[in-house]
Every structure is written in structure tokens, then in C-alpha cells.
View 1: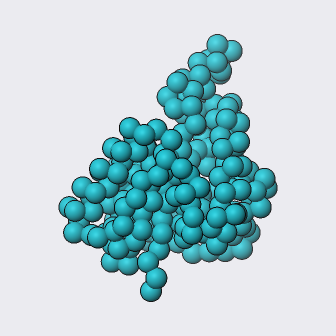
View 2 (view 1 turned 90 degrees about the vertical axis):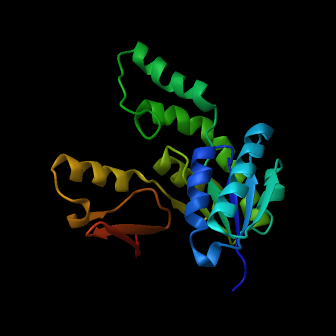
Amino acid sequence: MTTPKIVFVGAGSVVFTQGLLADLLAFDELRSAHIALHDIDAERLATAHAAALRIADTLGAAPTLTAHADRREALADADYVINIVQIGMVQATRTDFEIPARYGVRQTIGDTLGIGGIFRALRTFPFLRELGRDIAELCPEAWLLNYTNPMAMNVQYLTEATGLTRVVGLCHSVYWTMRDLADLVKVPYEEVSYHTRPVSTTRRGYCASSTRGRTSTRGSTN
């Protein structure tokens, strides 16, 4: 088996990077993977790289860990690309809430749908177009795993604007929502069965199901 190359785009998102790395390196097949970290913020990138080294050491894994300020350099020959960027950071997120609020629009969370989600999508699309072009040129067989919100809008845009077909949208909200609902009705999570059908995948739909709290994923053609 060849060693996969996994690229983190927006690796300066340290919380996501740390959690994903800990999960990835827990799998025997990925413990020696090449993990390429990319971020445009040098300080955040250095922090993410240091955290990655610490996580690998703690888990007894031996990945190849590289840090790249240049996105194209990081993407070369990648097998998987994980997108976790946040365009505009917290300042832009405040705007997503504050401007609609002036006109009486209240949002529980403004990064996924509604006018706040549209604001975020519009400032993210130019980046996604550039990322898609780079992937098509430098690693056309790679799978793009998108964590960046607004999930459904971003994945649809990537498909229509870049022509990429290996794009999957990922979100942890289903798992934690089911946890919260189980707590609310005072039923052990392990006894809960549920089925979900997200709208955040492209070309191929994925139906995630869980029986007794254990999740599996199966594909189905849209």
C-alpha cells in the first residue's frame, strides 16, 4: 500500500487540525502518511506544525509532517485535500450577524444558511475557485473533503464552477445533535438508531446511518 498524502488547507485552524490529526493518526493505515499543512498565516502555521509533531509523538505515529506557506507546493501529488479555511476570520463573522440584525433579521447561527450563510459563501467562492483550479492541475485524482461552511453552498459551487467531481462535504453536527437529542429525551445514545441524508455531497450522495450509536456511511446515486 502506498503512503497517502493528505493536505490540510487552512491548517492554522488549530482546533480542527488537532482533532482531525488525532483521528487520522489513530488508524494504522495512516500512521505513516504524509501530512502537508498549509496556511497563509506564518504564526498559525508554525503553531499547527508544532501541535502536529506533538500529537504524532503522543500517539506513537510516524507521519511525514511538512509545513507550507505556498498552497500549490502543498497540493502537489496530494491524494486527499481537507479544506478548513475561514475567509475573513472572526471580524467578517461579526459582520454576518450585525448587518442583518440592523434590519431585524435574527440568526441562531449565520455560517450555514440564511443571509449570514450567503455572505460567507460569497466571500469564500473566489478562494474555492482558485483551490479547485490548483487541484485540477496539481492533483486531479485527489478527493477534496470540505469542512468549510456554508457546506452545501460551497460544495455545489465547487462542482459547478470548477468541474471537480471528487468533492465531499463533511460536518460533525449530525453526531452531536443526536447526542444532544438523546440527552434531552433521556435515552442512552447507544440505544438510538437514526438515518440522515445530507445535501452537502456532490455527484454521489452519502447516506449516513447509525445503529445503537455507531455510525456507518454508504453511497447512493443522486
